[in-house]
Image 1: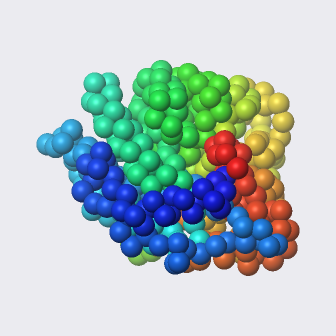
Image 2 (image 1 turned 180 degrees about the vertical axis):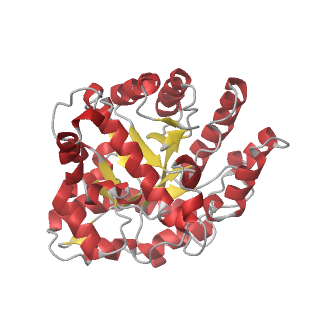
Length: 367
């Protein structure tokens, strides 16, 4: 975590007019940035550096690469919607109001159907621009690499390059890859590299209604493709990582699942009984521990909406496994910091861990 003096220095530089000239983003990040409006979060009298591990962005320059291809539609959809909210003064103002010191930026994957050449070029553009966004106002942003997971060996190379050369802290991946589970053995080269680098891998659903096969069931009112589909895709991805033995093969890999990990963390005990009730349906590798116990080595964001939901997540899996997630700039939650502060039954140490301590340790942010 960055100390108060360092943050004040960065804020002063921003107020003086720091501009992301090399980003080719077309705006100044410093406009209207003021320490006077920045919420200072304290727990037990201690100033806390808060870290939001689930925040979206998009890279306009990628449109030049995908113009005229099927990828142009999802790229434009991201840029024109909440997922493309720019890294600008308005974002900083929102962070300051919410008491978020650091956002970890991710680009939702929409490129898993590309060939290797286009995948390389898209990664080059997106990763470079993302790194530039993170450096525009030091201390406020970190980033996950937009790796080409459809080519696992290439994704492993991209992850290493992103962390060692660009200063990114891990990778953001989808919950599946063109119908394939991320637990499939073909993805082991990526998981091996992620474990070796101790990278934080952020798993976020994409086109969930289609990838989970529930498209027909989520028609009608209620935004069910998102409300049901997104947590379902994450739940399935985590369950496969457990039952296909990925988490046994790579026990030290660091995975954070969006949206509180989906449905699985709240109902994980059913997994423990499934294979005893239906042994004929459990032909995978022999696990080293109960299925539910693997969730204790995973991480989850705090986007579960209610204090009771957060309290349950803490009780089931520990405050050491939870970090703030806002889904910015999708307007799911108001007062993400207050959600942590106001949840009854949490100790000061647990609140500090969720607000930023866990993220700082995982991403090796200096204190």
